[in-house]
Image 1 (cartoon, chains in turn cyan, orange):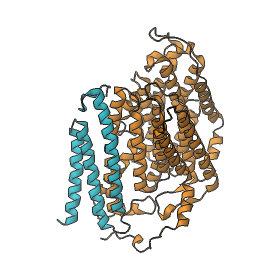
Image 2: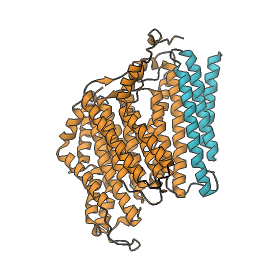
Image 3: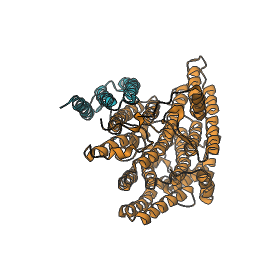
Image 4: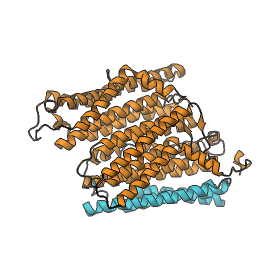
Length: 101
Length: 499
């Protein structure tokens, strides 16, 4: 198993772990963490593939943009979760389900 | 690696000042919106507490945005401005300019919607976020590179999450968090898919023939399919195609109505404007588009049948219309049908939401049965509602019928060409769905006209000049385009809509 396969495998594992967290966890902050894991899996992939296609450093730039994007998303997400906490006094997704699904 | 591409040998074109200024010229509409956002930010942090200025400023920003795009669509004709900033990230052409005109016009209509009282005042943020959505949508329409697509999709998404949570109610906060979690997960899935696209082909732009590289022998067959599915899920989530539609009902029910009207139009149309490029590039098999289209409209229409809340019902109705718009992607070589349907959809959907907003604001009603008997109180608005509902169903004499006629005849023509049984199946299912949708669209006007009023609703006559004129304008547009569809079609086709 060479280095690249190992790194891509790690990426795939991170992605799967993030997806599993999103599906199984009931805490909104935990779900947000799962999403971050998935984005970081993509970042790792971009860096690895960036070495494979070195032309314009597109992979590295993409990873930088994804980091910025993840930061913006976390900011907005945490603000919304704080608002929900103010109304419901909890961030458990089961308990903030007042509308019929 | 064996995937060295031809780009290796071409020298990098360095940016010159001249090429930057040339490129900025073609980005004038987006620059207008960016300036508008900056000015709005200054106004929000300034001590001015009234939002009259901000509202005026938005109109002064988006009006020129539409005009500049109109000018571009006239000037560009058949030419394409491809290498802005010496990169292949954006493509500006007459077609994109026309999409942006549609987006700008619908944003102007949305800005005229009166806001409900639950939204905090002064409402500077509201205008700022709406402009942000328009900027994202506008970039998505001209995007030709997945970095651009991601940035513009995120710009639409983040502002949409905040707009969902704008009302000061607990339901609004709940809807915003749900929307955010679903949406962020969809984005993450899409980013991961894009990373694999980059890995396999070495490119993330939609020009060139990287598609061939997707289907080589180096990877197993299911890898390209998986990559395409992952990437598409991010876009299909935004345009609410089943099975990525689950966020729609909750969000539509609890978001301020003007914002819902915007959600049902702007991100959706920008998404479809990009989807048609993506599908053309992919040469996506017709079967998958057809299956998604049938699934989406069936889910939307059949779920809408048993709704009691008007906004929830309109949410499912917008899912169903996504299905019909998907049908237009069955013949991606000719985008004029998609464009026509989209334009008509804007008129009828914004009209319907304008009336829902009116009744919600004036009489505080949201349930379908509460509309009973309202025809006697305001017959004019009753007639408007009948027209919009008939148009959404797709019956004559409204433009909704014309749009569906173009759509179905296009599918039939495609069927005769290819003989694929699935296309016939899609056609039949489209007709069935149009009939089913009649059952729920007609419920509101039927109750309004033929049933007695509920005693719980306080009855007094209210009148709103602005909404009256806006509705009249939209009704006239919907009726006029039935009798004179060639006016819109002629304008659409005066520049090439094929790829």
